[in-house]
Amino acid sequence: MALQISALQAAILEALDKSTQISVDVSNGDDNANQSKIAREKTAEKLATAIDTFVKSGTVNTTVTTTGSASAQTGTGTGKIS
Image 1 (cartoon, rainbow, N blue to C red):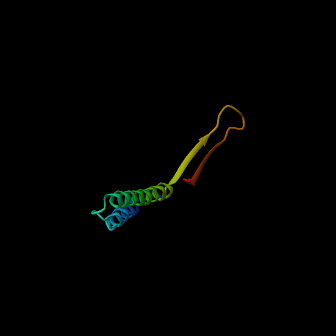
Image 2: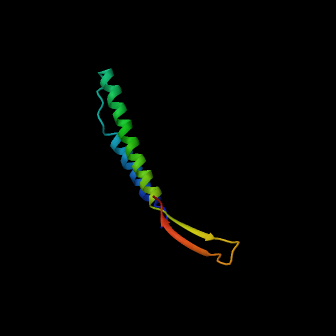
Image 3: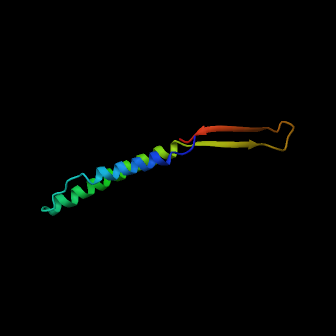
């Protein structure tokens, strides 16, 4: 199956949209830094999941050829990325 770019784009957009909805108390420097860090970590986690899902949605096609003996073989294979 071909890679689903539109699904990756949608997942990235969703992660970025959610990251902009996190409130940060700018009047408290410590809270601001902590909430900003949490927002970045959550966004990174969502992006990593989206990219992992995207890569694993592809299919790999291979061709294998062996030579050098009377039992030389040729074959093909299809599999998912894991």
